[in-house]
Length: 409
Image (tube, rainbow, N blue to C red):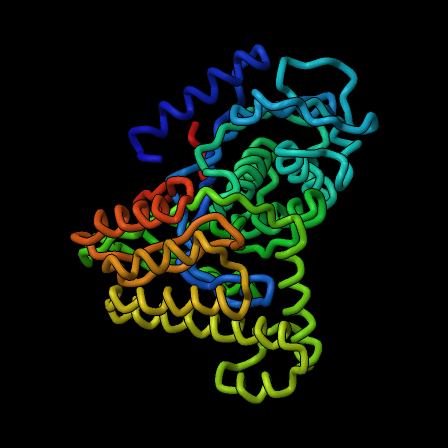
């Protein structure tokens, strides 16, 4: 979202809120989606990640209530059927069309289906942590973050909601504090066993920077990243293949990583040094566990290499690291898919410096680093390869590191 566009977005959200609820919101907040440059499947292993915030955001227009009700509306979900909510969680009165009405005190994990689980889960997580948000809220949400594309649309909804409630209720939580609570909402309330990277990126990224995150202690470092200054362009390619991380495959990889840590006698795979990887792999009998361990330990090393290259100003060389990361995700972790592999192969054949899948995988998006003079050719080559393979047209767009969660008005 550009600075000139932000006031218009805030006013649109506020106007829709007034239509729904009959009064002006107390404020409007925004939180971005993210694309991860490098460091995949490492955050729940206490490892390193390097995401950047997208200009695409979830916007929340919010007002406090005093009766314990939580009313939720999504511009994107309005045309869909209203989720069926158990009686103990529902509010007593009928609300405007498309509004999900809940009782804050009745929120329970698994009780709220669909999109409404994300903001409702944030309220639940805040209440569980002892924060005084039980008076409720009216919330209208609108998002430009593509759903199911591996770009953290759910984290954007969660963080926008959390930031709004933090401000309105004066909770005094920091960005990392909000991210941890939003992650708990997704893990325990929605039921997706994600790590903390998505929420940390949405809450803590800065414009013009990558976020180097140590997932063990949530230490953040803002790393300047300006591809255009080096004659480069960063592309995001949404394959259009949708995959829900709550269906078990993501959890299976996480379980394999945890099994590897137990077998090696460490708390998490972060504690396995890269130089000790061959010895560690020799101690593992299960091929699937061994492959997951190899990916995580080598991926942490790739984040360190990327940091060193950026520090030396050699941004072009980062491309090769991205491609190495994709090979590891494809061959060891087995979380890629034919469409993602085609993005990478066709982009590299057309002259890209590097490419890899990003996010949880099994679909979603890839990130491509290309020279400015080659970027359009690369995008065209990917589109042509998809057409020749009989796949639906991918959506390719350039991106720059954008602002993390913030109040719009």
